[in-house]
Length: 96
Image (cartoon, rainbow, N blue to C red):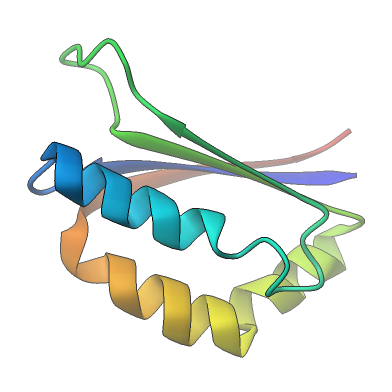
């Protein structure tokens, strides 16, 4: 199992913007066959160190994750639509 974690800090983290980006990320489930699991979490503490949204996706392998990254739905329906809202993102990728 390969896990891909992305933390997003929005440029304007209003309740509406956080929900909008979160909904787009959740929309990957069922639209990208390589994804085995999708989890989207919204930060509750709002501390100085906090990021606004956490995305956790799981795949059968690193190769499946690489295929997901270039999948048309991911590129056109996710990345293109959330990019205007994102100030910064950080990732962690690992196998278990």
